[in-house]
Every structure is written in C-alpha cells, then in structure tokens.
Length: 506
Image (tube, one colour):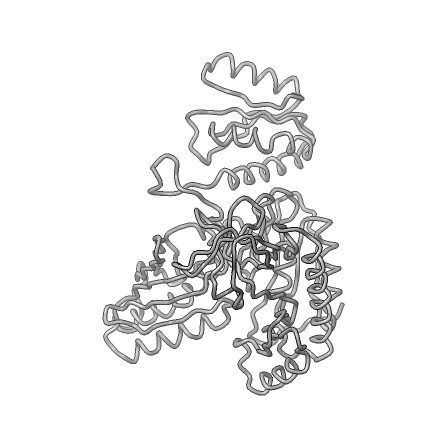
C-alpha cells in the first residue's frame, strides 16, 4: 500500500461501513470529522436503480405518451415513449429496460430502454454514439484530453461517458474499465436472448460496492468495516482499481457498535431534527412538504460584532455553507426554497449567491441556484438521486394521523439489536428480558427474534408494555435462564395486560 499525502486544505474523507447485521447495511462518509453522507440499504428493500430487465409491454397509452411494462416483480414500471429509443411499442412486446427511478409510495419504478453501465472511470452506453466528459471536470486541458480518449475508446455499437473520477487517470486504466464493462454488456445481451420475459438480467453492486465505485477518491484516507466478509470484498475491489493510491482498510472488532464508536449515531439523529444550530449561535429550520423543502434562516443567539448589516451577512453566509451540507446529508432533492435574512444591499446578495455557488460545487448531484428575491428568498433545484434520509429512517406517526413522524419499526428494532449486542458482549448472561412498546415488541417477535437469539447466543424475552412510548425500551432483567423466566412469570402474574413474546424454543 502506498503512502497517501493530502494536499494542503484538502478535505479528509473516511468511509465507515456498518455491515455486521444482515438485516441492514449502512455506509457513512465522514469529512473532516463530520458526517457528510449516509447510505442505507435493508435486505428486503432491493436497490433497483441501475437494474436491467427483460420486460414485457403490458399497455401503451398514447394520451400520456407512455407505456407500462412488466418487470416480473408484481408492479408494472413506467416507460416514457421518448425513452424507448424510437421503438414502436406494442402490447406483449419484449425489450430490455433499465430502472432509472426506484418505486416509491404508490408509484412504480421508472425505466428506460437507453441502457448505461457505470464503471469506476467511465460509463458504457450500449447502442449509443456518445463520447462525453463529466461537467464536474472543469480544467479545459484535462477535458480536451479526456474527450480525445473517449473518442478513441468509443466503439461502433457503444458510446463512452468519462466520469469525474477519471480526472488525471491514464488512458490504459480507462481502456481497462471499458473492457470490463463491454464483457459485462455482452453477458447481459446473451442472457437477454436466451431467457423469457419478464426477468432480471443484471443487478448493480451491493451498497458498499456502489459507494466505493462512486465516492472513492484520493481524499479518502481510510475505509473501516465491521464485517469480515465485506472487509475481504473491499480489499478485492480495491485491487481492481489499477493505478489508484489505495486508502487503508480496517476491520473494526470493538464491542461498542461501530457507528456509536465514531459518534455517527448522534449525527444521524441530529439529521432528523427540524432545527440545525450553526457554530455562531444562529440556526436553520428545515421543513418538508409534498412539493418542496423550505429552509428558514434565523440569527438566534448570534448578535454579531459590528453592525446589523454585517451580522445579517455573516449569518447568511454561514447558513449557505450548512445548507449545502444538510441537503447532501439528508439526500434532499427537488425544489428547495430558502428564506434568508433580508439584506438591503445588492452587493451582499451577490456575495451570498457566490457563496452558494461555491458550496454546491463539490456536490455530486447537480444543483441550480436562482437569484435572491427582494424578500430574501432563494430557490434551488437539486437532482433527486435517492430517497431522502427522513423517508428512509422514519414513517408517519400512527398516533397523530400522519401530522408528525416517528422512527420506523425497522429503525427501532436495529437500535434495540445493537443495544442487545453491546449487553451480550459485556457479560455471559443466558437470557435477557427487554421491555418495549407493544407494536414494536410484536414486530421484533414476528420478524427478528429467532434470528437474534441464534446470532447472539442468548434467550431473549420481549415484554410488551402498553405505557411505553413508541421508541422507548428498557432491559428489565438479565442472568441465568431460570432466573429470568421466574421474573417473566411474576410479571405476567401481576400485570394481566402484559404480553411477553418468546420463541418456541424458549
């Protein structure tokens, strides 16, 4: 492994992957000690974006210039006719399509017949003629070099788009990337010819693999994982990146859960809050609606040092930097309206717009910034690339008819499991008795309990306590099996409404 040298002023990045639990994988990107990005994937929520299917056309609707196609997973996908490469679609017709937007809420996935395969440095576009270069590469000399390389690597039946990660990479590495992607495409084509529709032909890399492919740069100094299998996969993946100055890869083996050890759990909780405090004492309020996200900037405790004009300007400039971070961290896309504090001077508004352009420049997902209105409002549009963190980790509150939100059962369950893992690592108790909200206790019993007992090597009893709040849980007893069973029997005897869940083996 070669030694890595960060440039002065460069951002230091660390990738931390919580892979030890098969039910859920979480990957965090830490920049200069702060959480910058969070990716979550659960075992039953298949990542569909990028998947390629041999689909069957179910219906064609000229009135909306679209069709519905059967992917074989129980819900039809939506295909705009403009995305069908000029094909004259008919019911029962078979064609290869790729998912561009995952299914969400009551909407099916969106697909296209314009297929693309992303590699480390390039994107292969079968049946395309492209030879493009990422717009995020701004150096004109480098753009010309890469454009020339892309034209040389482009084939008669495929196009090439050079990714941002290719900046400074030699032609040999780019050619190797194209060879790997071409072999993959030939295999997909072959399977598409011999298999019947509807069927899945290709699934993208797992979560950690995708993050490494898309986010691994020279700024990444370390990759930390807590699962042995993923640790080996990461090392194997890095060995494929020829010419890359590989970061250090560490296998975490501590008893404290990985995200808790690095302080990431607290930052995740903070990313779900409406109020975000700034270092100066000012704060943001972030609210979501169906159509857009609204952010309000307030001076809060910040009183400035000179006069009102400079206090307002400093607050707005600081807020601009934090807003860019929050949109990325929370994976917020679509329309964002920001209510900055009113500024009376045009030059101050110009400075604010310049700051916004600067802080959004490193963002992988393109953001467009519109001018400051007389009311201090700024409109931003940001590409919606994946579900936002709030919809991933929370759900509408069952107690307030959807006017608020609570943690999803999955999220609470995994918090409880990490707690039980920590308790189990600290002693040799045969059994644990945990109290939780009845709905959460029943969900864990139906979904996870037998798996947890096998993995942790403990008998686990779940007492459903009606008085407990949705997210509340408590370890009531631990120790020998007979001791905990007596405690459980006493609870059931004296509290008639109490239900204790246990596996059949218990």
